Image (tube, rainbow, N blue to C red; front, side, top):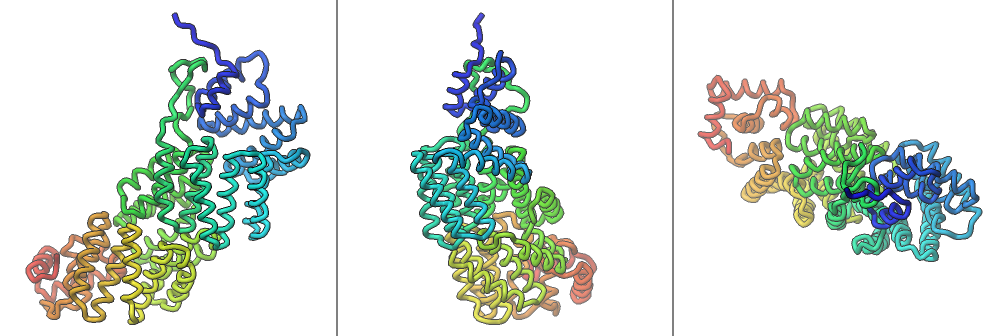
Length: 567
């Protein structure tokens, strides 16, 4: 019979060096529980890392607490300071800010007693984040420079890349976009070239993807999201050579997958949503909630929110409301999606109030430019729906101030400007054409189709019915391909409105209602599409039946098809 080798500290350390975290976790945990004497503080620190990678956040904290105690007992302030900083990092992720603040204070106390060392780079990063939270850009820049100086002196590729990413975040928050993106590109070269350790690779992917989405840099977001998912897809298999288990069963609850996968996947979901790959995005959103670590509630909330967005645009309004509620339960304000859902349901007061509150409560509007732009774009849509052109104009002005930040922001601003001009009976074709060109170049089909609907109205306003018809047909085709059923029905209902003579003496609104009836819409669905009450829909139907001398929806539908009023 083959004799399995007992786990050894040397083999466990070798597993850590190979990023074989499950192997290291099983070996170190076995040694910690069965060795004649406790693990050294250095190995407890490794056990903490391995436990985190293996999905045991609580065990990670417990092992690091013991490591810190061991380092402190022998007066090793450098390593004690490093353990204290990571404890602050983990406690903050677990939603325990008081414990995090206490351990950060301990880290400072330990590290002020030692010469320059890599651990002080992490303290500089904390200083940077505190300065940003306090809206002190000068202090944040000073901390970023100090961070990079320490990283260079320590000759650490991991820390140099992290410092450049952190510096980039400060510059981007200050609107110095070109400088910030240049630094971010530099940091990501090290990431995508495989020059960094696993922990820093994952951290930098998450930081860069967040910065790209906040800055509305869709091109970089697509490129780096693809790279992140490729990195996450590499199997993190169970290797237990010399770990006491061979290839046998794992201990309960051990994660054998890359724990950064869920964090990176949420950005992938956001990108897929924008690209119009809704079925895949919906599946990926479900997987995010299965993959994220227990301390990543914000990521799970983001997945529920995107799922709600997809369901809303597909016309599944009740399911969308459930997704938004889940996102809210996990700590995310589900706006602007919830406001647009309420608008579709005819609950305009709720839509207006929700957006106003979300805009007022946004903690860092200058940093999350894309988030603010989306709120403002929705405000324009809602304000125009309720006839508040003054409110819409204010939102358009703020959107246009954000527009220089990138093509995505510019497209949102041009779309809003065109919609406002259309409502005011002003020249709308120029901003709307510019918006359509931008959405098409960005390969974002849903927003492009929405702009086509506005363009159709603008062309009709200047008497170009042929151009309007082309835009409506293109919009309907795009909506149909995406599965945006309500929008596809709306486009179908609008096709043919340019006819001068309407059979049966129907009014324009009655023709809209009849087309939606012919498309299979219920009274409730028609009310949602036309933003009117179900009572109003019923009244229109009574008028239609009387004018056409019919007594059923089927007969009205037949009339619509036979007289060219339905597609």
